[in-house]
Image (cartoon, rainbow, N blue to C red; front, top):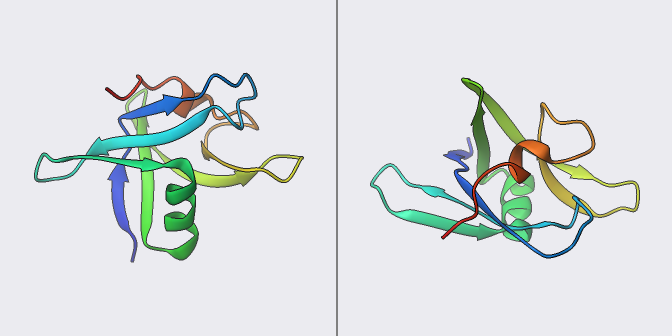
Length: 95
């Protein structure tokens, strides 16, 4: 069973393509320690079954999933999003 983590912030690149904008995700462990992962490490963790991630949006828990753009680029988005990773892109920038 993957360990489950809430995503509280992201770091964005300067790219305009939403599939390439997220560089890393961040959150807080139950012990209060902050964590941060690159998008590629998060994708590997999801695909290997090591981790799962979620965000809270409008009082609901929404799972983060790996998606593939029409150009074959893997990226993260929430299940509630269409092709654009809007729920993740709307999170605050990690400090």
